[in-house]
Image 1 (cartoon, rainbow, N blue to C red):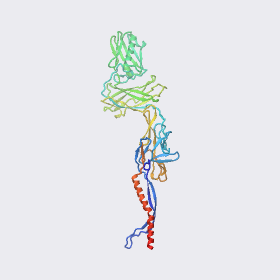
Image 2: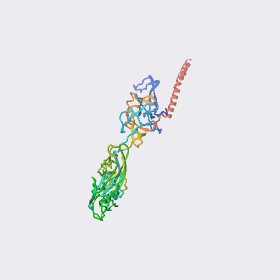
Image 3: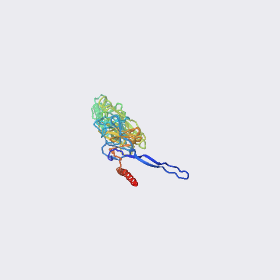
Image 4: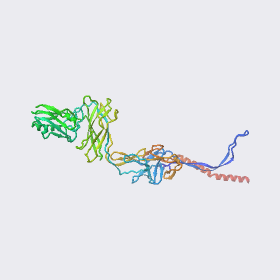
Length: 520
């Protein structure tokens, strides 16, 4: 059995059958010393046959379902009625997904995982459904890591800057959404802008600052009949040039948008003169985050960061998230701020959850609620602020699209992990091991299998690497622990012993012949 996988060698020990006492022992007495007994051994017999459970060498096989054990323990198999134990881990999956012994089809025992990938505690047949699909899971958490450059100079808005990505002069998000309506008010040459046809502008996905300027210009010209102009300046402000008619109380307002309303308060402009809005800014830094909805559709979240330059404010960054949503149901929690300590670590976070419905109520995927993790307060494990390049980005998120089982892997703990086509790994099962108080007391039942006996003690069943149980060596098999050189030596010794014993009869006969000859 030198090449038998998982085979454990054994040894035979002998003892004398009985002894004939020719003289008993005597103790020292009357000036004489003691004498030892005189005994002759008569016959021999086997005293025991011991199994030697030393570790066999592990041989790599490149088959992922071949398993070896490094250390103590046995694989557990079942024929449906009884349990068997073996060190031979030549396993494979049958057509029904059962992990079985290749020689007889006995099923390998272990622990199955639930839909969440959590292992159970009941010992059962290991069965893997290779046709299974992993359903999509919506993103509920997103973690960030990286740096925001503390030395950045404010970036002013350009004519092409989208209104939904607009910040005020201090870097506060104007928080404009698709579907929001900006209303123009004031008087142009005595004509109230509220009376003209085009006295408002509704924001679309591609609305830019220049589009807003053109809409305001159209409204003013409609009221005056003149050739007033509105243009976007290099500092992100809108410059209004009046014609022959004066403009009074000119405003742009959007309901509930404080920062924009402050930006849009132009005031009075004398005839043939100019007036401007406040400056506006675009993001100083932009990063993109891919998340997934409940149907597994990728949803891109665009995070815009602008350093807060308001007097009296330091080490603060404002952010805005641009997310897909239905116009009738704008997102909430899509703006916030991060404040940093003087050492660059995170000091506080104002908003931690964004809620948005990517398809609208009762349509398509469920509403998404994404918890944002910018790092631990007073630590450097998330977003930081140092005088170095921008690098803030998504660290990880927990959503994923649906996928099908593509492959499996088995680790040292016997955990069978499913590798899915969507890049997700999920725990499917775990191979169990059994150890015994007295492994040499196990009974051999053939096929390299053992069964529990009264003297082996009860099986101590559990996960590999726990208790006294060893670990799994995947893609390998434990070879026989038979020492070929030692076995040959023992055979030669046994052969010599047999030869000598076989000549006893001849020697005894010769002695008898000599006795007969003495009489003659």
